[in-house]
Image (cartoon, rainbow, N blue to C red; front, side):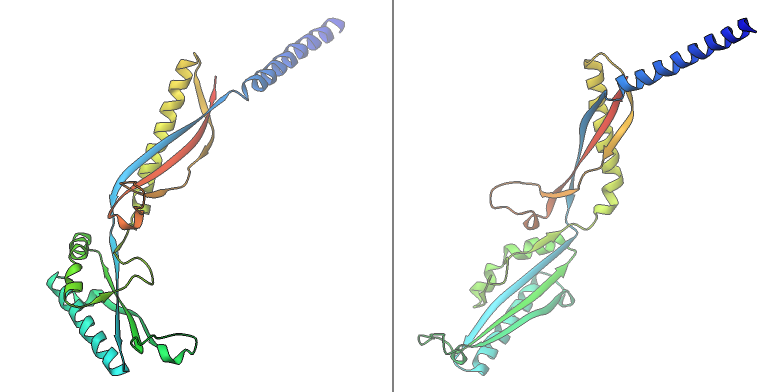
Length: 236
């Protein structure tokens, strides 16, 4: 019986030592990991253009100001028609009428009594056509239309709405790039790359393709989509 008991105690000691050894191994290697970043970029073209055309008409009487506003509106619609932009793509978005003499604190200094600010919004998926039309907007000025930028940017705004369609492929590209960087680190450190410890997809950014001072992303039809994935891998 004593021999059997001694044998059981010996086996138990061996198993306990093995378990302790495994625990120490996990403890030693549990903090051995590398953090890497993977970048994926893709050049995309906007799929929607919003072009607010704002103009001003003035007159000493409301009828006179309205007549000028109608003339300017007709000139804009004729210009857009020459640019092959459908009338269905244009809508009245804002109309403000100001009587300068109704405000006792405003000095008209002999200026026009009535001021009409109007905005026509052009909404189109034909990006090239909008770009071309916007480049010829000086023709409106030549025809007597007084353009305004009081309520925001005067040119088109270009939007990209297809982000969800390219997200899966870009995440895969960023993750693959991160793993390649981790594998290179493991080779340089003379170790082996282990399993995934943690991953952070990162935020998708839509940036201006040509990043120059004063150039905003919304002004450029061609954009750069970027995502940075942060991944941690165990090292063995």
